[in-house]
Length: 339
Image (cartoon, rainbow, N blue to C red; front, side):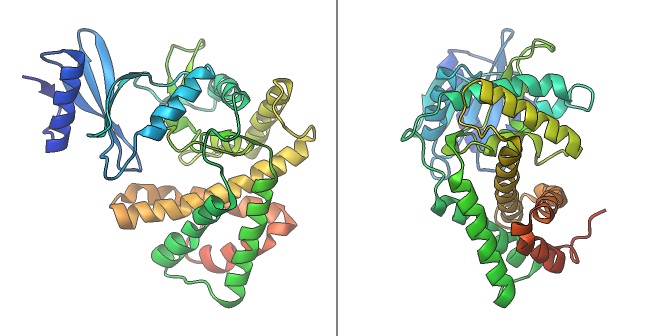
């Protein structure tokens, strides 16, 4: 009988049996490995000193094809990602190589962050250098606008009970126009869209760490500063501004030396990173509220104050984003006081 750590639902049993058949194993340990904010979940199959990961992506909810396409692009670029052992797209199952049990988020701290971020920056630059137009979906104005709309629709309206109108709505529309225009003005490269410690794996012992990259199915072709700011202004941990700036400078120098289309002026790049970061953080506030109310996953709301701080810090730094700072000061901070 196949060993498990807990009772499995019907779909998990189906995934287990499919994986054992694909591996021609009569018996194996099968247990949850992780879940994410989407409808995907992951199981680990272990047998005979080896392990594999089963991705369960219900086909009525998720499409595995972008994961396969982007994974192939990452591999071609020399980035360490899970390789496909077997697939059944009709059922929504993928059998993948196992990159390990520890994410960056599990182990990163003030002492080892520099050593861990160095290979993450190098992998990101390899991925960006491989960029070609017309291969991945464009991070266009329509997509940027849909993402920004998540903030008033889900965080303000659903979570805080605030519906924008009058001067507040006008300010919000102004902010959206400015953020979208700034994003579209950036040089375009491949964008992972969730390049953060939770999706990076320790695939070899430090200090010779080879970073593994997960959760790449939503990649697009868009602003070059998106993934760097995502890496250092993360959903689940915060760093002092001086360290964030140091890592962004490290990325900027290495990326420039590698031939990426970065502005030679670091201040211009930093502005690009801050502004696309604000777009992302507004989107994530909306997504975390949506996950709570639509999907019944409340744990993500606990991290929303981090994103409020990110947005406020950037909005106060740039005069053009003063309307955004005003919105947060009038509408959000009175209801979500920050320590």
